[in-house]
Image 1: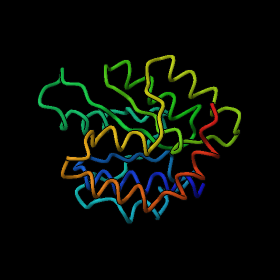
Image 2: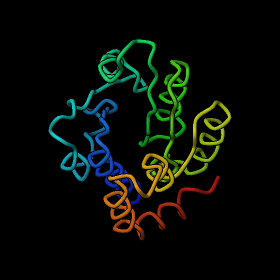
Image 3: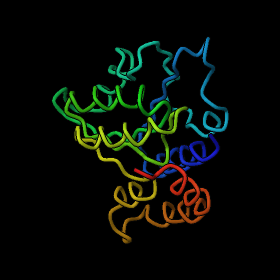
Length: 177
């Protein structure tokens, strides 16, 4: 769990630097528990409260309403970075729903996992075939910045350097497709 938390922490910090919105869901929190405190303490105050759900997909009506507030028009599509558990259940169903709605989905391979480790690579391969971009946290951060001349480059680059060891361990652990 530590590697996924470190990856998620890095992405939350990067979202703040890049002024990207963060949306959080929990899966039946009364039975399965809340979002880990290591993440909730980093989330900006402007982030909407975590949406508890029983559906496996995050794309429940309340989250769909939040997504609509992020676009200028209903036809505008978003790019979504997705981390979480379980890769073969909630991450898969969320990704498929987002793709069906026309959004671009980046599944962060070092930020997702499954209790049964064998489920994860099967799910990631399926999601790539379905049209999701399966990538790593470091790769997507530099894709988002795009150019070393970007005014956010130094901050993102510093964050990547700061988390280099955790990223290396996470990629070596989780990124075997």
